[in-house]
Image 1: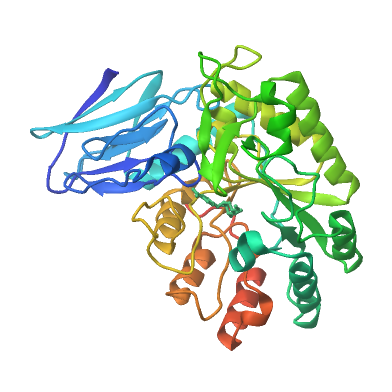
Image 2: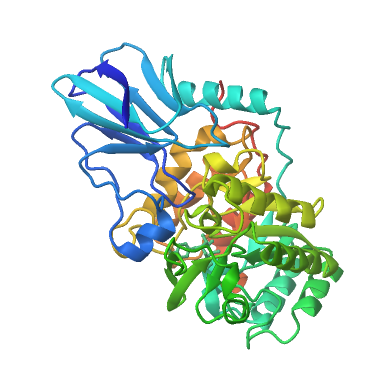
Length: 442
Ligand code: 9PG
């Protein structure tokens, strides 16, 4: 770590803004006396925070981006990665006397501006110019199976909601089947026991005039998957040869697919071309932090390069289809996606189950959605996570308000038979609202 700025502040009024690594990593601003949001347990540290780092609550820490508002009326300092799609230095800030000392472990620049949100918007505008990024394509509206059925989703759950979309005349373009249709994480072309005919389901979705969308976690390989048994050589490894952990979920250990391995690349291409042949033209690719986990790969490239080459391969295999990233390193994803989840998951409860702000909760989802609002319309369309409006959802009015203000991608994820009058009217309204080009003007 090298010191890059020493900023005189008013300790009572100063604020530090952190950018977290991936979609689910907490991102927000703090007073100097606040305790920053950090990981609570190890498996979730890997799946929600940057693998390399395990900073505690005693230091402020941004991945590729950190801002300091001195609180005395003098300009805000924004410390940012010089080439965010190539390397994302960790930036840390600690507080000594009346100074905030900022240090970084790579190339960063220090910019000043009149407020944190303007500093972020101006910087993002410059990145867009420099990389020559196009204006993001307008997002389709979606219905997603996850937030009602979770992994227990069945083929008939999707069919019954498909029928309700018609009878309720809901303005939904894409029906997106989430986690649960597949046999195992990694075995994307093998159906789970709850699905008899996955291609047939997608063809029914299309024959009703909707578009077909699918969820995958393409850079994850679960312990019990066929993929791991058949191709143990396709996993990212540590120097001692054992596969690197990519976290723990679905009651098993997870590993990372080596996106530079020719065999793994062929497999990914086959999976996504097959989805194309089923008529799917909307992809939510999830848990893709796994593509950027450090370790030994077939090709000796940086984790960010491996990640970008994996996403680019998927991008080219899906042609013009719409691409939504989730669980995705934010700055390394610039220029690769149509839409991006900028927050942890919404949940029926306002607080997360273990106090970790990266875990499903309305608290964490709104916090990140607000602090990453500047990304919308610049790097991609911001996905704040789905509308859930059934009576069971705690503080559902506040969630609807958040989606209305900060939602670029609008998706409903209730079992449609669960909605009361308020829930249905709110879902209809949120799916129909025009989406502003920017949430933060520059
Ligand atoms: C499917 C879900 C949904 C959801 C995604 C993602 O750390 N965790 O244990 C953890 C579990 C699930 C999760 C995020 C983190 O949700 O955001 O929309 O697609 O996967 O499994």
